[in-house]
Amino acid sequence: MKTYQQEAVLLDLVQARLRQEGVDAITARAVAASMVGAERDGTLSHGLHRLDACISSVRSGWVVGDAPMQVQDLAASLVRVEAARGFAQGALARARDLVVRKARETGMCTLAISNSHHIGCLWHDVEQFAQAGFVCFAFVHSRSRVVGPGARSRVLGTNPMAFGFPRQNGLPVVWDQASSVMAHGEVQLAARHGHALPQGVGVDRNGQPTTDAAEVLNGGALTTFAAHKGFMIALMVEVMAAALTGSPFGFEDASGQIPGAQTSLAGQTLLVIDPLRVPDSDFAARVELLLNALRDAGTDRLPADRRYAARACAQQQGIAIDVKLLDALTLGGTVPPAPKSC
Image 1 (cartoon, one colour):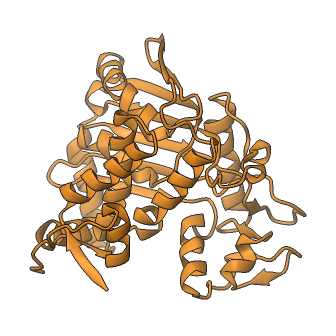
Image 2: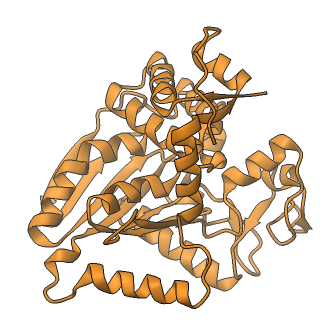
């Protein structure tokens, strides 16, 4: 059974739940915003479904909820955050203002987040910079979950990347995709609900193709999209997110040895570009020209359109969530339902 809740109410509830587990206020707010934003926009694989994994990972000691993160101003266009095994969203929240200032001053800023746990949607990280007028590219890697073409074992992660840019009139265009055929969170949801996977998504522990999500999760592996093309992108992300930040590679991740740990100790890199600093580019008008050409050619949906539609509906009627999940968030208390109107 579903109930409808306002975004602000859910945000406060998730933040409070994380605070109860010892997560510091800045990080709890940032992680909650990512999860609730995903739930609001219909990205359920990265929404409140991930809260249990966050809590379990903190309780295991694998994630440090109040990690002593250090923001380092390394160069005119380079910021590093040593996340000290805390959540990546908290690291980004602490560095955001400095990154924006540097990107405005120099035209571009690179943010390297080291030794962090990114459990959530990557588009949320990118969209906040696109809304501020920046072009943003982001990379994050994960523990080894992907088998490459012809390979015998997993080395790379699902390794998502996200890209976003502002529009002259309208919400930013933002996309977020894994290097695997399907994101790991989507496979988890399929296993939880007993749904079969599409053909070509993964293999079992013997390397044989399977549509059983549980087989993929229990010793199997995901496959890269478009075979070697997705594999090359996964490799690029591993270099950008792990090697560039000094974080463990996916095959070095030790979370599997720690009971309760459900996140990867990884790195994240963001490239933030101010398009207004490029002379005579006429960026905003050129972007609209391109998007109009795509529409005229028959493109029926631009990246993020579906999320924005779900967001608009949620802002009117509230976010639909399972009653049992709401009970868990309120620890048995009650929250008045939001009005349903669309």
